Figure 1 (cartoon, rainbow over the protein chains, first blue to last red):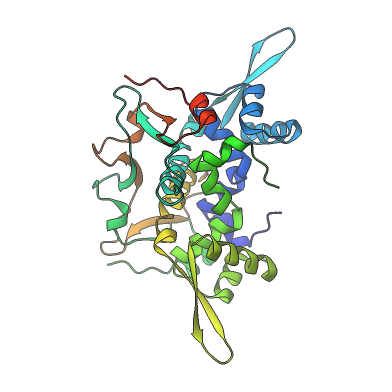
Figure 2: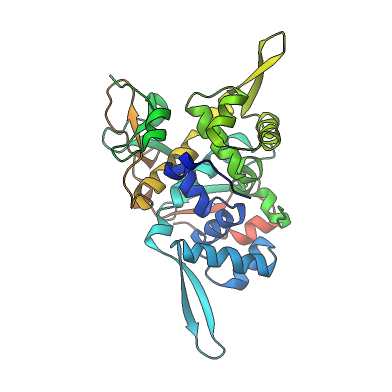
Length: 161
Length: 161
């Protein structure tokens, strides 16, 4: 059940979670980035009930992260392919990976991100696009944007400078 | 309901979601990064039912992302403060923010991340720690790690190079 206060509807984090925050949705996207496109592949990978998978795939299509495309006419068969908006979601999964890899690997490292071209490990870290500074070295705070309503302005009264 | 295949338990993304993937947990962490520490603050901000908030806070304490600390003796009152492990989770929320800010802002920008010291906007982007290359310019793929079991090895048969 997802009940949020009115103010939540202005928050991009809450809105993102509204679209993609369901646990299965994130794992479906992970599988899509791993190259899965077909219902049976997702189902086998996730061990998810078919009716649940159908619902979550439809939600991701509705949210514009996956595109449903026919790949066979008779019988009709569809595949699910990441859209540009879906591909843009990858940093969220990579940030989850980086956190889990750092904090939940008591039993060893099971999954490593590598550059396919070189085989070198890739270690994702967030930086500021303009300056290249790592985010963890910046006192970065949220502030109300130009189109924020009164509740967001009230919440985020950051006075920079 | 969270039912995953056996193989999922090896995946750091799935394991991270197991701990923190619940929608409310992410919003509670967002509030914690915004400086909230007290039950009433979270409750007012989120419009969440108190029993649900109690459960989600306890889960985040159990998962080691928040620490429950007394701030008053009579009557006893507690605050919830991010641990190092919790602070490390921020990139996940910032990646969600960046995605939502890019894709879900048809009605304008309500929330902007800024450097508190300068007031300049901060635009989070993932790069490889070692080389500084943006992740979206790298063909980065997951591969089985040194401690992966047979199912992970079967799933991630990437042959780099």
